[in-house]
Length: 206
Image 1: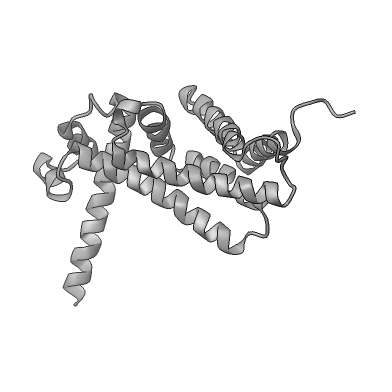
Image 2 (image 1 turned 90 degrees about the vertical axis):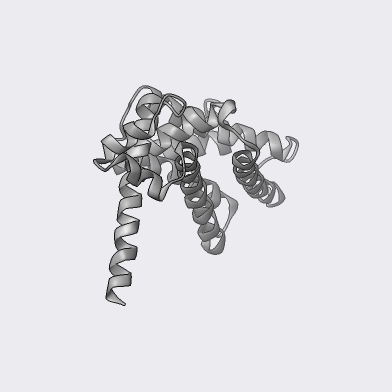
């Protein structure tokens, strides 16, 4: 039993090392220019061992995307169970993106440059993740309209584009300019600004 546990733990550890190395290589070289040998060298393991855990470069890329989307959707599930209103649910999405950028910048960089902004990498299966996320976010927007938190004279789908567009553009700018987050206070200022402008507009208050 102990040997089985040790073997399983070792497998997960090796997969994590390869996964992190792939994130670094995909960020540095892009998906299409990256090679398995680059990933193995970055991970400090043999070329053949990468293929023992992942069938191909595309398989690794899919694993990174799956990790990204599953983490995001799991967070939304948890928020759905405990949040009291749509404001909290939308705030959770903003905070999740910022937390991910702080803790896993390579993965966020890949999401922005290789997934969100690279349509050539969007296979039907990969695009399905986007659709699920968009639909779930739109459901929160509809809830906000039903509760008269957001105006209802603008289509929920348009408000979804505006909300996610602002968030993605903000994160993209930080990623592409290699700006690092400088602690909890800055994260809170960014989140508050994005949410305040979305809910209340950017017009000067008098």
